Length: 156
Image (cartoon, rainbow, N blue to C red; front, top):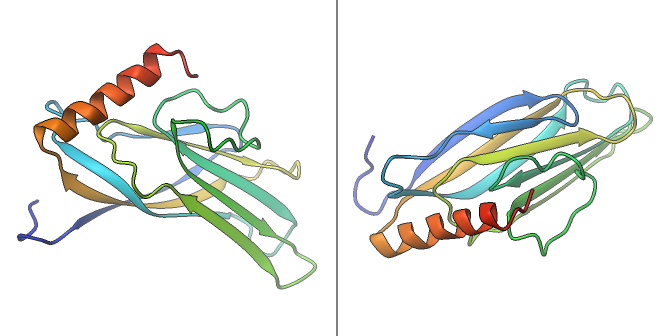
């Protein structure tokens, strides 16, 4: 589906991830000429206001980052976004923090990892909005080479 000149196309994804697991968002194409940028990323637990929870979700450009979900490292070049959500059943207050690295453009699959930190291991809902952009040959090459470099560097 094409947009008229100057318009942006937004693709949305939503799902549920078991705590400590990974979900793949398939974005790759044969020629790599379609790029994406994260516009919105939200998380929430399934049982809202019924128990105390702390949730963390992150989006990466490579798979296999489930071992350290509660450690946030902004120097990790494969990290695209982080969301933190806290809910307490004893009060009406909730807290959410979302950090998105807006300038990152990618043209390969991305991976969402999430975990619940209070031990209840409830599944985590996520909602993701991506802006679709047309990449010229240079942008396509840069995005693809960056992805290959991260894979070859063995950044798990």
